[in-house]
Length: 101
Image 1 (spheres, rainbow, N blue to C red):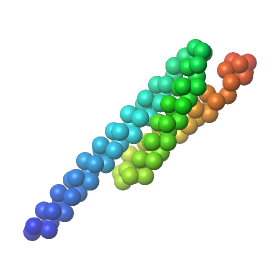
Image 2 (image 1 turned 120 degrees about the vertical axis):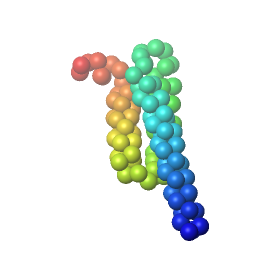
Image 3 (image 1 turned 180 degrees about the vertical axis):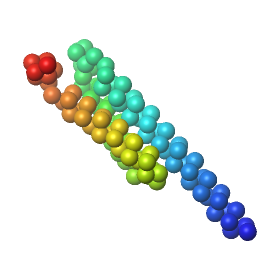
């Protein structure tokens, strides 16, 4: 009986850890996506925004492997992909983007 109780407690702890990890990844990605939405035309801001987005992307990608819940991992992976696309879009010089808009 005590083994079941310990096993159940470990499962609860793992579920809480998984939720906490998802929250951390979510916040990191939200922050990076916020930076992607800022006006990068200000002097020097573009490089700083891209650098911060790259840090957030790397952190989130590293932590994602620890999320055991498959649905949550898929959701976060999609958000991570959105950030990668935003970062790729921001890597194109502003003049080239506005020329094709």
